[in-house]
Image (cartoon, rainbow, N blue to C red):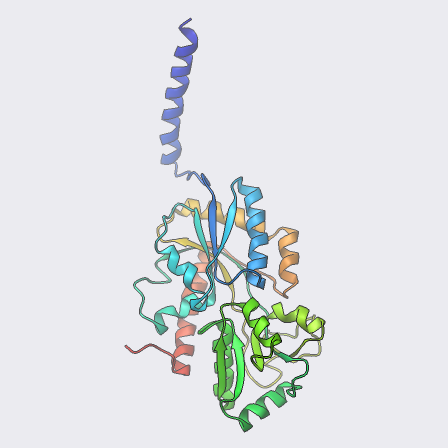
Amino acid sequence: MQRRPLLAMLAGSAASLAAPALRAQGQPAWPTQTVKLMVAFPAGGPTDITMRVLADNASKLIGQQVIVENRPGAGGTLPAQQLQLAQPDGHTLAQIPLGVFRLPYTQKIAWDPLKDISYVLGVTGYAFGVVVPADSPLKSWTHFVGWAKANPGKLSYGSTGVLTSPHLTMEDIAQRLGLQLNHIPYKGSADLMQSILGGQIMAAADSTGFAPHVASGKLRVLCTWGEERLAKFPDVPTLKELGLPIVQASPYGLGGPRGMNPKLVAKIHDAFKRAMEMPNHVEALAKYDQQLMYMSPQGYAKFAAETMTREKQLIDKLGLARPA
């Protein structure tokens, strides 16, 4: 009668001895609960839609739900800031838009984007462009520039927020061409599209979440910002073709809190890499003319360092640096 309890005790002792051995080998237990993935833009926009597909794919792979939590505003930097309050256990992750790498130059912060984020993997980037309402008198980029020069400060355009890639690229364009534009910031693409469709602004600089409105005849594309013309808009010139040496894709990926175990980072990386390469995620990106832009943890950290250097140069050039 004592045999079964004794065996149970021995099994329990063996298990208790095995657990420390696994920890000693650096095998992180993940996930042990729901994973929160903070997205930098509002629900309903291209980033939110594609990230939810990624999160759903990852949920199926890791056996725990990955919940998307939208944290719009502050130029897409709120999720990275929230990481500073999270435990480095892999259960809080964040989208890291390019705006994060500008933050130290535009406002005083108590953390460092290079040191205080664990970079997991690069995922994708955007295809950007400038659109106007279909009935706008600005029929081409030449008309846009001409009208802006003739009416300093009166051409209103919207972006997905102050100091985001669309905003800074437009300000870079304006400086190069000697334009004075009236910038109107929004929290994300969904709000921006509502505004331009409602006639509240004259133009919008955004990722190609505007494509359905172009297809329906409500908006017109004046230029795109890639290395080459977009297959979806083969008749629309790039900035380079228009004489501006600017290419903007604004790559982004996933990061976690500072101090994550490298083996835990590798485990999360492997799961999300599989999730991002699934056909349904690739197809979701393609709807917005986005492609996979994979970076490993090491490659992403290197990209972050190089980007911070470039962004400082741009911020200084535009005169947008915070006072020392």
